[in-house]
Image 1 (cartoon, rainbow, N blue to C red):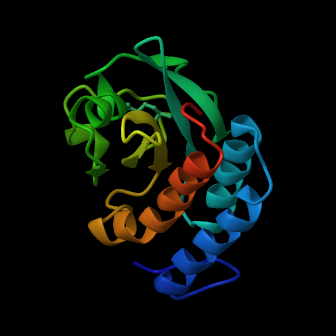
Image 2: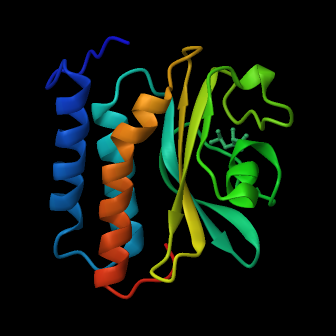
Amino acid sequence: MSYSSPICTDPAELYDLLSTMAGGLLDGETDSVSATANLSALIYDLLPDLNWAGFYRVKDDVLVLGPFQGKPACNRIAKGKGVCGIAWQTDRAQVVPDVHQFPGHIACDGASNSELVIPIHDPSGKFCALLDLDSPKIGRFTEAELQGLLPLINRLEDWMVQGNIYSL
Ligand code: SME
C-alpha cells in the first residue's frame, strides 16, 4: 500500500506520528467531545484515501454517532447491525476489504468500499465506543493498518483511565 501523506511516506513513521500527535491533542484535555473531535480530524487529515473517520459511542444500549469527519452518517446503530454493530457484539476489530461482501453492511456514503472498525474500552475494560474509518478504495484496510492504529487507540484508552472517563 502506498502512502501519500504530505508528511510521511513510510507507514511505520505515519502511525508513530499519528500516535504522538494524538497524545499531544489529548494532553491536558478533559472533555471527550473535544478530544474525539480532534482525533477524528487528525486521522482524516493524515491517513490517505479516507472518506469518513469518526466515532460511535454506546449510549442506552445503542451506538450513537460521535465526532467525525466526512459526510453525514447514520445517527444510531443497533448491536449486531452493520460492521459497527458486529464490532460491538463481538468486541473485535473488523477489517473489511470490500463492504459489498459484508452481509448487513450499512451504507452511509455510497462512495465507501472498504472499512475498518476498532473497539474502544472504558477503564473497566468494557466496550464503550469505536473508531470507524471508511475508504472509497477496495482493500484499503489491512491487518497491518489495524496494528498500526492500535497505539492511538491505546493512548485514548489511557487518557480515559487517567481522567476517570467511562464514556466518550
Ligand atoms: N458502514 C457502517 C456504518 C457507519 S458509516 O460507515 C459511517 C456499518 O456498516 O456499521
